[in-house]
Each structure stands twice: as C-alpha cells, then as structure tokens.
Image (cartoon, rainbow, N blue to C red; front, side, top):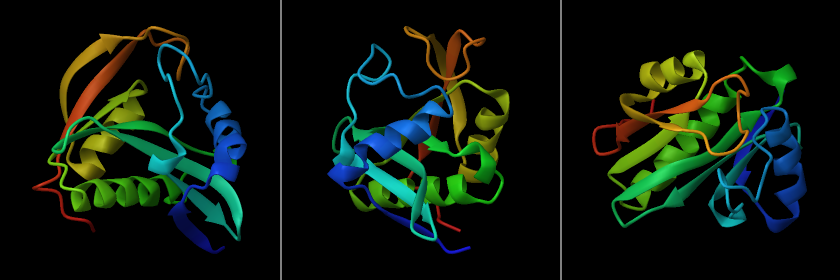
Length: 152
C-alpha cells in the first residue's frame, strides 16, 4: 500500500467533498464551512486513489485554523489522518504561523489532537449547522503552538 500526500488540485474538489461526506462534513457552502479553498488542501492517496483530505485557512500572518479533514472509513487506523495533519502543520509552520486552532466534536478526535500534536483545549462553541457528529451540539476548540511543535 503506497500512501502519498500531495497538494490538492481543482479537479479534486468533488472527490474531497465525497470523502468529507463520510464524516458528515460535506455541507459546503454552509454556515459552518462557507467555502472550500482547494489551494489550502492536501489529498492523501493510496496507490493513486484519493482516500483522505485536510485543509486549513490563514487568519493572519501568525494564526491559522484547520478546516476539514477526513479519511475514508475503511482506511481509518492506518495513520493516513496523522500524515495529513503533519503535512498541514508543517506547511503552516513553514508559512510562519505560530498558533493553529482546530475545532473537533468527537472525544476520541479531541484526544488524538492532544496526544499526537500537542493541542490544548481552549474553549468551545455551538455548531451553527449540522456538521460532523449530528448528536454533538458543540465544537471543542483546541490550539497548538507551532513554534514548539516538532514533526516526528
């Protein structure tokens, strides 16, 4: 199984949304996700087939937030999400971002960000549209200090 992470291309838009649908994060545009900026997305492929995607949004020269990330359910647990997250964190650090904000809803995902990437919980906010886990009404907001983060 050959896993590769590459910059997304405009022709990836529909496949990214299809991957996001597997995690109920495909409602774009919506109040939760107004746009899908392909230029700030990475795509994970297995043997050339797109199986995951992750994006980000620059908020200022020193701050950014993650946007969407999902891996097809049948390939979860193989480290593909971790590779996508490392790639976007590395790119943002290269761009000079110091603080990276992430919103997550599932307790296991929140713990994953904390354990593997050094995030800390800084608050929460109400969801404004059905997005992610439909039975969870709030996002947990996490932050990572990219000046302290070291890629594995």
